[in-house]
Length: 426
Image 1: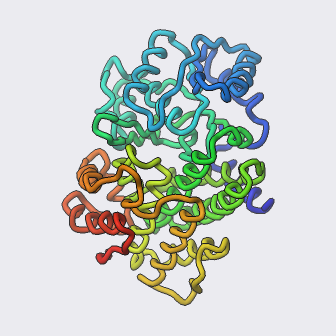
Image 2: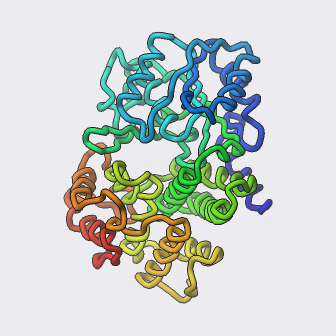
Image 3: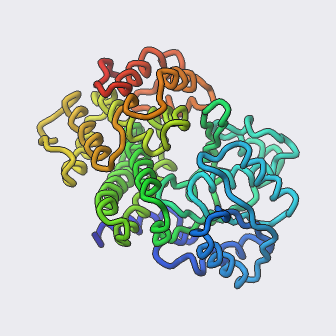
């Protein structure tokens, strides 16, 4: 285990250098140190309404105050999936209190909302609506035109999951349409980040498992779709990240208090965050954005990935051999991966993914999921044609476009409905 931890830590230090404090016990000093590097007046955001959170909040606020930074406001964080209304509410606090730096301590949704709110606080007088910022590079474009930089965010992660504290992504939800949308922009990367892996023991098991599956999806989808220019780096990060997460998930499911397993989960999902800075996610993530009313993000990605794996199999033999050996190592695949190719290899790896989900007690097809109807398939297909989410189609091993969505993605979603393997292939 120590070798896996050392390798993961080395890659993360190379990735973020001295802008990221991670590991056991870093919560007591790093937040204040980083906040002081970025300003003298801070606004603090977190799930302050919950009793379990109070000791964590107190540790962070003490760290900030010890560095001479004034906390000018303490604000309730966003609800799961970062609804529009919470982004605008947090933005209002920032605009009225005028901090130099935003400090947010929450899971991925809370951090995503804080990143978007800081962005709106910086550029809202030019463009007060969030919708024009969805897509790739729109924040950077406006920053360049206005000569501004986004208000700095110190992102303190509380759950091993999305990597929101490390990345250029902000997922925001329109709950009326039941649709998640995405900002992808280097300008919103938090300049300082903190993750004390020990605090994940305060999270419910369901959130821990969901987060691990999200991290797995990051590693899988990036590696599957990696271009020749980035494939070697994507493999290094994704292969290690996947093994660390699968090992951590297997052990934490047996013993939620296992600190070593919690550390593995944190390191692995952080590598997943690094992976999506190297490349991008694709179909399973895209579909998950349309399933937010019935499935958590991690579960939706885990449910969809096996079906896309078989669909992609002829184009990703090398990746499947690498990934299949990890699932086999931890007991989720019985077949001899070295003797398989093409569709048969895809089927074996997909079966390993399904076996992991079953071990965790998660659904493996849409029809098993309470509240899911065929209208969700229609929603997935419609969202896949939205130009603001086009990057997900282009990230596939063989890129698709909106005109091909019904022909190729439609059968995958129908297969995922009842658990059968899609008949079409790339």
